[in-house]
Image (cartoon, rainbow, N blue to C red; front, side, top):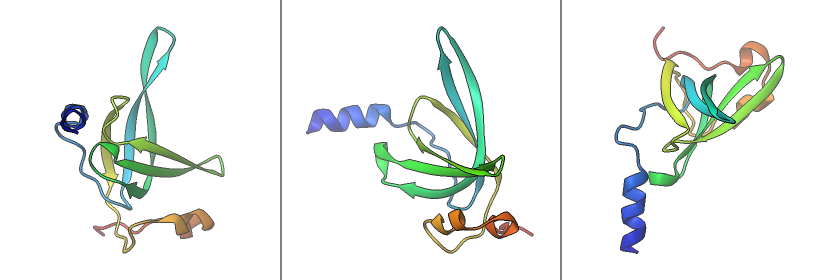
Length: 114
């Protein structure tokens, strides 16, 4: 059990990004293509955060060419370079799954600062 805790502590990032549900974020993801590596951006709204500690995940949703796209990122993964907060959202729910059923302006989250 102690060995698991040691491994867990070594894989946690020193400064995990601070963001909340409803925030619009840019996730910088490292993509490995053969011998080359590049950084790809995924910008969208954080609709969920799950678990905690090493296993913490967050789900980001965006609409691309009229199709809703969601990606789940492990917070402490080495492939997630950094998470930039573009805009802070004002929500009253822990999970924003209701945004999946909305279209257009109704699918937006209000800004925390007007």
